[in-house]
Length: 385
Image 1: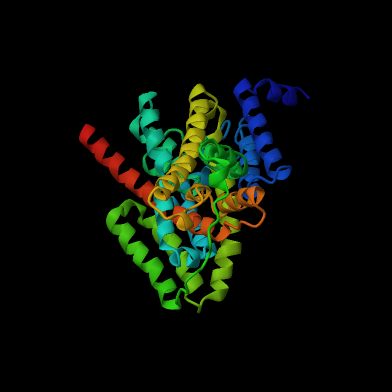
Image 2: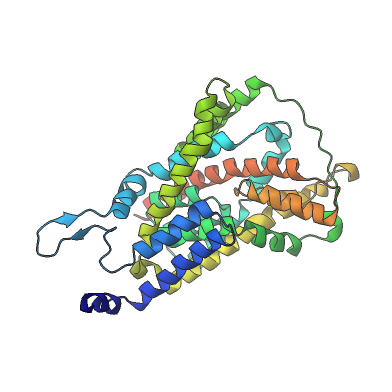
């Protein structure tokens, strides 16, 4: 009993806060269904790494001159810190899930993927103004893409000291897409705009086009933003497995077994960065706030871009501005939100396929944006050195 009591007495108030954070993430995963495959392992991991003398962290054995390797710390050092393997491998599964057909049949939707990255760059500038170092500010800005793996990878490559809060914010806001995006969309649209109807007349996309697309995108991304090749390349590799037609078993494995396993490991591994002494401080609250701002402005950027395009389009060719909001990387949640909002305004107005086109474009755009940011920030840091 004395040993148990001393264990409780050694818990700091910051650790109690992290137990609360962990339980909140578990609650959101189970009761609200918010990204349970990620939030549940992250929440449970947050509890594990904050138990006093936790065995999941590497530590010196009492009375011995040797260390006991902690499993979560080992996973973090191996799968994220040393190689970025976990977030990169996840993109094979994501690529295998995506059907680029709707986007290829309506190429102008590529523009919305680019426009919906506005919040990233806006937030980077704001974070710098608020006193964050450029590498930390760039990592925080990536939260706006609502793309967890890319956010983690950018923070790691840029050696940000806030990878834990950034990962939690990125995945939390991905889960909160159905709450945050409708608010942001209604903030900058009128009911008349939300009622705009869009016909869907898809053009047939040949098998050759589907196969060439991931190869061409990899070449282009590699030349424009070489730092994005790992993410874009693995995303496109997963899509090539899907579209080639001769690896159906591997495609199904990538979409289900691989994606689920990596997601599970990534969620509990990232909890290494949620240790109380690193996580509980005022800057974490600032990061959460800036991340939310980036997410909202990404959504608004896509919507406003659609409204600007409408100034130059004929009446019967106008774009429902809500579709622009789907240009973020939260696939397919954002497209579903747009579809649901469209049906709420007009039960016969189906926007899903248009929104899906913008959404898969956002998948590519967010990864390329991450590569561009890495290249720019590294150049700035070299000039400052």
